[in-house]
Length: 79
Image (cartoon, rainbow, N blue to C red; front, side):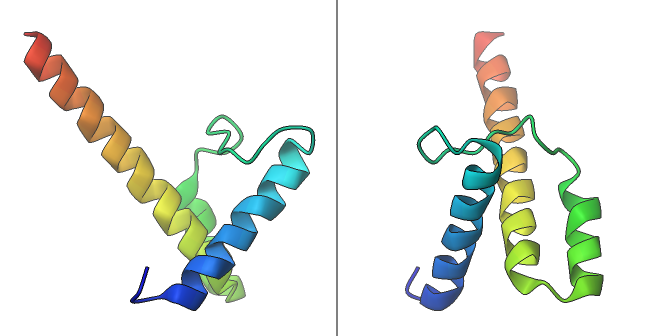
């Protein structure tokens, strides 16, 4: 957070705006069912030079990768 404080604030704003758009009646959370095309959307945002959206999509993709790795590790421990 200390490396990119302003960028983190902008991504946080984007998260809040998305939550208001999709779930205005609920507390802030990421509804992972709303969009699963992070890399395609990220490239569209690169072309549009919407850097807040690029950062959000990059973080969303990274989170999905982390989630998948965590699930894979859990399956390995179960075997």
